[in-house]
Figure 1 (tube, rainbow, N blue to C red):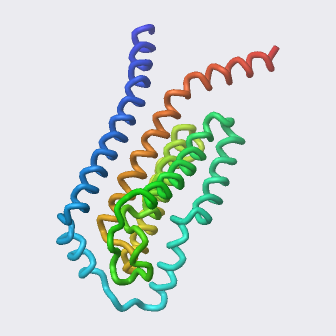
Figure 2 (cartoon, rainbow, N blue to C red):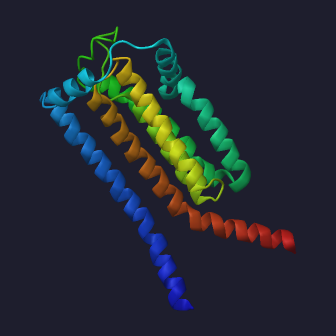
Figure 3 (cartoon, one colour):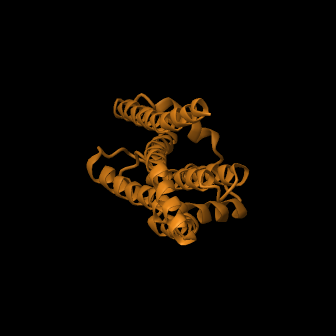
Length: 229
């Protein structure tokens, strides 16, 4: 019995380490991609993807892409974050909800900091503000960080099933990034850079959730024991 408990504890201890390692890998991937962009080594793949996308859009497609674009804006993702945070808070308490709110705030802050500090990259012709930085895509960054963190917390807390949460968590960032590519507002590597940073933030938030989870369980058990007296 004690051997099984020990193995379970070891397994739970390895999960945060794996998440941190995954986040670090995503951050390194972003750094390598940023270096390639700076050295103009991604022109071929960016041009290939841009040429592969149709330039004439049907009205239905254009409207759909315009509707997906706000997902990456603060006014698009903040309400979604608030609803998810409130739902988790109500069911599992504030400790379980903090990673979602933290991922949203950090993603928005990081997108702003990178926009102010990174060397501007000339965006595709479809973007009407050529002096505004294009790399990385803040839309992809924020949508990915929030969607993946929320899905992880919902599944780990038993609030949603993987079959429902995971497809939605993949679809939202994909729609946001595709909308930017389809409307010729970002290069392919801009979107991929946003995804990599979003993955790094989501993995860090998930690791924090796992590290704090045993303590929250003990506190919850104490509260239930006191109420039962």
